[in-house]
Length: 212
Image (tube, rainbow, N blue to C red; front, top):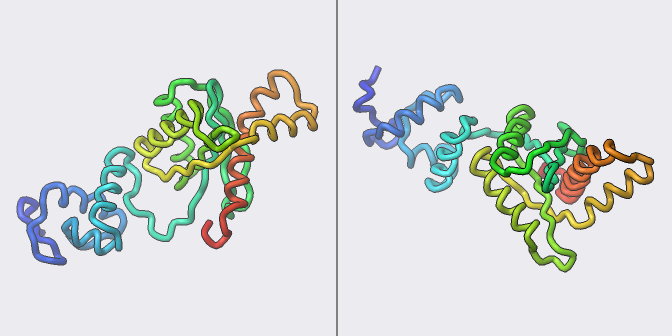
């Protein structure tokens, strides 16, 4: 076994840094048999060095696997509200969206941690977050809040976040609940997760199935 204080890259022969040695230890669970420097590791995964550093940063923040080769995407729909945030999830085929629940939390950092629980539990790769732009397409205060939450989710959870135009989504949810004669407290609890389902379903319908 090589002395950890002086290990050479099996690709180019350069001496590995302490960070590169530590990274290799984490990649052993992925079946990595070779010690590779950052440049050779980037070439191995067919990504740029900058992209590799981004993934390393995400790995350190979340503890998630660095690279998920050939992993099928799984989407989480989020309808961000001032008091309640609706959550929906795609089925395993990424054809249908299903309402999952509702988070009652106003503080964005704590809300993000609760969203992360869904991401970890359901092995989510992408979050589809409703973007409440104005009817003329401009961004107002609510849209700015959604964009800020998107950045927070990316940083804390280490997943891709897709901002999706949610104009009229809540209206559609209320119309459906009115037709279903759902009233009172149950209506308030249902409308947000239904809005999340509508947002996610619209996204799934808009993406060619071969890319899902």
